[in-house]
Image (cartoon, rainbow, N blue to C red; front, side, top):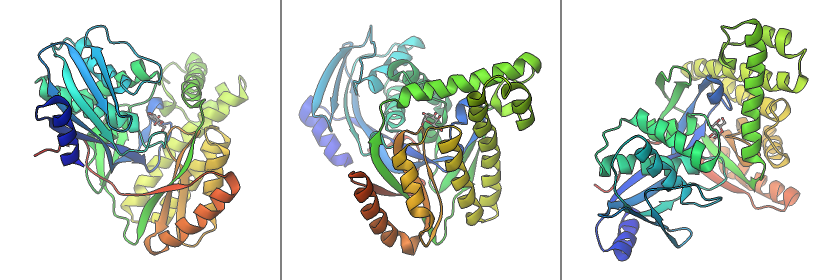
Length: 383
Ligand code: GLA
């Protein structure tokens, strides 16, 4: 893939590029907790965005997306988001470098990604982080990885219009093979937790749906959480985020105001506790406990946070009673995308077959699946 990308670049631009990779991610547990300053437990996966790049002498961006077979030319100065354009994920990052005062030039770039789009695997963060890593090196900006994480997150806020938390960009940039990252989204302290599944493995089932309300609903959930915090903080000013809140506070100060906001906040407070419990279970080698927590997370996301959908609920229901499955849940922002399943390795084939048949029969949609493992974060890959 890297050689093919280099060749394509040479064919288009007649010069040799550098090639950078930044991966998609899974999240074991800790969903919708990052923007509430709680904990998350993600890992990068092998599937990744690759960018081949070389600087130009002028101020033009010549961008080519392999999957779209489309070339876009933009001016470096005056970059603005364009509704629905793939180039946003590149332009948004370039614009952040300019905003930070770096004097970068134009560049030629070819993008190829094997992170499925709309599957909840952070295909956008993968591109943003690959581009951030690449521009940082090509133009000697000397930002460290954490600064690049923040930069890529801002690009997502401003050019993709999603007020995402920090998990996706952090996982893409900072991950280590065979490890999960336990990230404290308040202090940004993090710990690599060895991830040994022994006789088990992880498989993602992709609903093949991405409901169009996803980004509006995401921003709306964020506001509901902030609303809950405001009601608590009006009485207890030291409470700044849901990370600081407990169930008692929610019952006392949020429930009397609004039942829906109460339910949203309840999910988040419990989910933050589940991440701690999951880390304990992992360290003790208790995968069954981890699996139970995943089912609880799914129930919370579906009933209280209401970011699931019929297809995701169906996939979790289909695997629940199957032999060898110890945990399953929807993963990522929601409203489509994938479920994450923890399964005995020698039962995986049989599981895939049966779920495929049932899902396709019930929905008339194809079911994709991906076997995933914890991989390394961003880096240069052409040497
Ligand atoms: C999306 C966002 C993340 C995170 C997850 C939900 O992937 O980009 O920041 O909030 O949803 O956990």
